[in-house]
Every structure is written in structure tokens, then in C-alpha cells.
Image (cartoon, rainbow, N blue to C red):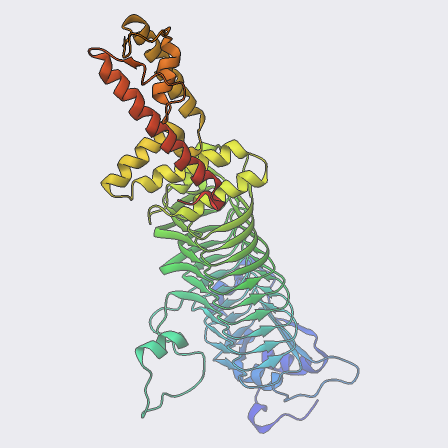
Length: 525
């Protein structure tokens, strides 16, 4: 039997098993084999035969026992009640820590710790403090219940990060900062500093700003009460939240500004109550909200200034406003039902659109849902997309809708001129309207002047009156057939002649203005 230090000479039988097993890294299983009795939710009832002091566990992890020759030391413990705060902050741990179905009601602190692997599977836990820790392996909490939140700001995980099948809740009251530190009496924290350090932020179940995960981050089938704050985090192997449910206790279900990820799946039954904010996010793969259920008062999804290879926005249910402004998206796969409220689109650039059920009219209605009102760029972006895929008529329809929407923002004189351009030539995107007007006016003029012919101005000149040619000459801005100077309308037909002359000038001006608008790059006003 190895010599015990003075501090640990009095070990309980359970602690002695753990003490002796650590050098070889073998499991110590204190479970009874009865499902109900082994559930760590009932860990408060476990007696001394299953209790291990946290200080004993910490001493082993900090090197109280040397590894057995030829074996890898580690603490592997199942079915234990860990009494007290487990604090191994600021340490370099060489042995793995793996707990299964354990009860840890007080804090577990790994702040500024470097370790080779940490696993808490199916455990009942209080609060996890692991700011700035480095885990050179797997960091796992699968199947566990954490009642007072997890702090992992600026942590580095060089393996996978697993939070699947969990129950994770934000801390109640005002939690302390992640550091074990006393406040400076000469320089107490300001309110802004408290916000930055996460002091008093009881709305966050996971506080992991700046965290880096080299493998995948798996948060599947997890129930979260509170929010996930992962601002500036990097998930190089992707972020996966399929079937998880987040019930925010503050405004945000997820706050992930400036996050970088290989992929991000909020899909396959994912549900959230509260805003999902991913401003300036970078996803080098698919960001998917397929079959998700999301709701929030006001804005439910904030994806402005993001760069996404592909965005799948086809939720099962979505209640609230969507912001896609100033983002760059390779492929946008969505549906009309994806935007039940407003959608901000100004500055959005996409390379391709998918969603076979969309019609041009529905896409135009999509553009019109911007609560900020008319913006030209979304129309030009959509028209450019139609042109790239060879749908020129659809592109013209979009640009015509753009001019009509712009007209609402003009002064009365601009609105009048705009309506005239729209009526006559469709702002240049429907030049056939001018031909239609000319045909109607020619037909009417020919019929009327045939019935009520004008008087010849010079009776000595021999001329045959042709009502069609006369009407056409009146419509031309400049007399081409010399009919105006030869014939004088009589009676009320003078008004018809003046109307035809004015109409000719209006049609000519509208055609020129419309052609100039269409030929101008981008069809800008």
C-alpha cells in the first residue's frame, strides 16, 4: 500500500478505491445496478459508501499519486457523490478525468487549466467554470444536467466538444465571474465591465465567447433554459444543434456575432424561443434552419453582415422578423413561408436562389416586406439573378416593380410623371405599350376624320384627303407627310387634332426617357 500524505491518511472506503485506482487509470464503479438508485438526480440521498470528497479528486488530478509503470494514470469514477467544490484551476493535468453518473452539486472549476481530456457523462452538476482552459482531447457533458450554467470563454478544445442529450440551465441570481478573484476595492467593476465579464448575466446558460473548438461542437437533443452566448467562437468542425430546444430567459436564445464555423445546423426539429443573432457570422458550409421552429417578439433571426456558403431557411414555423441585410450568401434556399413578418434585404448579395415553389410575384412580395421601405439594391440584385439564368422577361418585371415602388417616395410632380411613364411605356420595360397607344389613337383618328373630314386650307390646290395619313402626321412630333398645313380640322375635331399632337409628343418623350432608363447600366433611375 503506498504511503498516504498526512492530509489524506483518513480515507473512506470509497475514497480509498479511487486513490488506489488512479495510478493505473482503471474504473471505480460505485453504482448499485438499480436504475432509480443510480440516477444522479437522486444523488443527495447517496450515503458515505458512495461519497468522495472533491479535495481527494483534486489532489489526485494535481499529482498526489504517480502513474503506475507501464500504465496511464487517470480518474475514472462512476456513481459517486462528489462532496465540495472540485477546483483544479491554473493547473496542468496529465491524467484524464472521466465521470459517469456522478453527483456534483457544487462548482467544478477548470479555469486556466490545461488537461488532456474531460468527460462528465450522465452527471448531475451545479456550475462549470472553465474559462481559458485548454483541453487537448475531448470535452464532454453528454447526458448530464447542469443547473447553473457553463463558462467556457476563450477556452481551447483540440478535440470534440459534446453537450448532447443534456439539460442545461442558466444560473439563478447573480453568478460570480469565471475567475476566482476578489474585487479591487480601489477599482470596483463598472456596470459595463460586469456585463463584459458575465457577472450578473443570469440569462446565459452557456457563456463561451472566443472559444475555439478544433473538432465538431455537438449540442443535439439538448434542452436549454437560458441563452447560448458564443460571440467570436470558432467551431472548425461545425456546430450541430439538431433537435435541441432553447427557451431564452432574456432576449436572445443564441448570440453568436462574429462566430466562425465549418457548418451550422439549427435543423431537424431544432426549436427556440428568443432571438437567434449571428451578425457578422462566417459559415464555410451550410447554415441550416430546415424544419426548425423559431419565435421571438420582434426580430427572430438576425443574420446581417454574414458570409455564408449556403443558407437553408425553410423552417417548420417561424414567428418574427428576419434580417439578412448586407450579407453575402452563395446559395439561398428558402420558401415564401420563411418570412411571415418583415425581412430586411438591403445590401444582401446572393449568387443563386433555390426554392421551386417561388413565383416572380412572390419574390416581388418578398422584396416589398422590408420594414425600412423602398431600397433599390434588393430589386437590382433579384433582376441580376434572373438575367444570369436567362430569364430576361422576369428581370424586366422586377425592374418595373422597382420603379413603381420608387414612385411612392417621390414628390407629387415626380409621381405624376412616373405614372405617365408607367402608363405609356411601362418605364421603358414595356415599349409595346407605346405601339398599343399609337394603334388606338390611329384607329380613333382615322375613323373620326373619315366621318368628319377637315377643310382644305388652299382650295386651289388639288389634294385627296387620306384620314389615316392625316392622323399619322398629327401624331408625329414633326410633320412628315405635310398634312397639317394642308388640312384644317373643323368643329369639335379640333380638340381631337390637338390631343393627337400632344399625345405624339408625350409618346415620343416617354419612349426616349424609357429607352434611356433601360440602356443605363443597372437600369438605375
